[in-house]
Length: 119
Image (cartoon, rainbow, N blue to C red; front, side):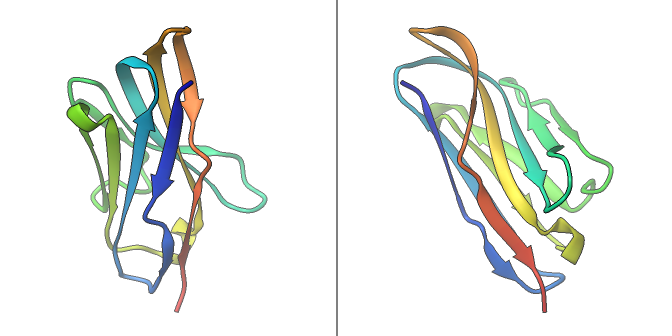
């Protein structure tokens, strides 16, 4: 059984920073691309950033220059450093990992972590 556990969310003032983490655990053979998504109330879930196993990255236009995605392959962990946060960044943030386990290659979602940007 594979599980993804996110941490690092919270309440921050506009202009502040947060660092999210997402660690995969279980019977893992390999972790491919890992993504961060977010979903604000009333909105669809949207891709924030993704990173391949070799470190290539991709960002939504709304976060380019402010957010940085990175990963530690030895720890099966992906990070999202969020700087210059804006109220419109408020959302539940989810990680998604494409993981090979004894059950084959499957996508796995974390449970989500709340990020609130407010003064």
